[in-house]
Length: 62
Image 1: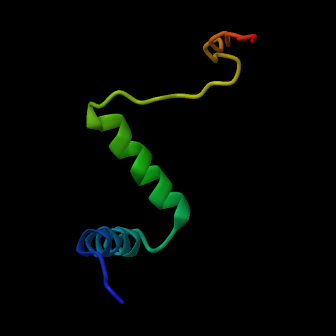
Image 2: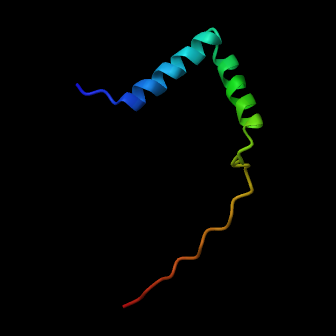
């Protein structure tokens, strides 16, 4: 079976990060959130009740 080298690299990095945090899911999530906060990239938030309105559909009649 062919293995994608990019997928293998991502899995290897993920495994090393999890190992460094003792495979503790709470520590892994907190580490990811800390990296998000300091990344400088804009983040998307799906806050309940703040959805943009749906575009109205046009009804075509024949």
